[in-house]
Length: 344
Image 1 (cartoon, rainbow, N blue to C red):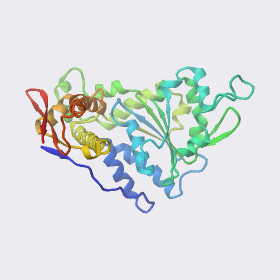
Image 2 (image 1 turned 90 degrees about the vertical axis):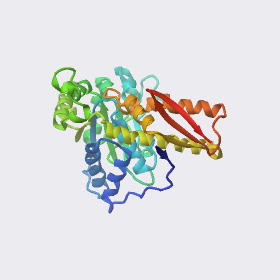
Image 3 (image 1 turned 180 degrees about the vertical axis):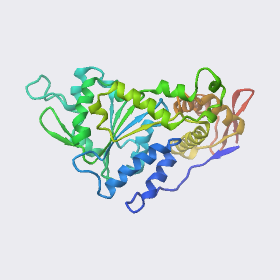
Image 4 (image 1 turned 135 degrees about the vertical axis):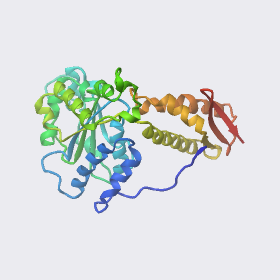
């Protein structure tokens, strides 16, 4: 039986003379994607050392792979380590800019056009600067699901990715030299899934843990999809392309521990003196992993499984005042069914 407790330890600050601290903290927050950490950390270290190239962003990184593998989580984890909050970043949801005319919202209407004064651009210098903090001057800028945006979006990004500048509708200039720019995309996701779990033949009978997935093969699949979608000028301005592999069971076990730890912190923060303890039996844990481990949906499916089979039933018991302060709530399983046990 595994118990979950709230840790009172604080993380060490990131210092230029402590190059391993950043990677170590990211590995604690981002599970199952060591290649992403090994690729991103050197850009931060170059900036901290004052050796980042002039007239360009600190780095431009494209994150490829199936949904739920940790692409957006990579940027959030980096924001948490650098700035103390996973929300301290400038995020542009490219799904909101699928029409050509919607892209104008990023830079605002130029003078003389209807709505010039009423339309405030989304990418201003103030917003880029606000993505930094007192702990670090690195602004994290995320263009999420870039493949969904209209073609004019990628044309607009050419100047940002190459010269670290963006000219707004009112001719003001936004500087991105102290920005680390991330682009996420699901391009090639279905092909990557097929490469990891074939639908037929001998390989289809091999367990997921045994097939693993050759990183070089997955990278070639992702790169082929990128080149089909984007122009050579756009691809040539990207410094690094990381292909995320579907999460294996070992990674899901660690993520499951993080989900429970996060729920316990929520219980203590929200309920205070009415808080309670959490436990999970081996049977309950295995059933969660069996039900929530999905190649197609990744860690999000595991989170939904925990919420549906544990968090929501526990919330119902708390609302009915059946969980006493200081008691223990246990998740168990028998014959393929989840059971919630109370120990007062």
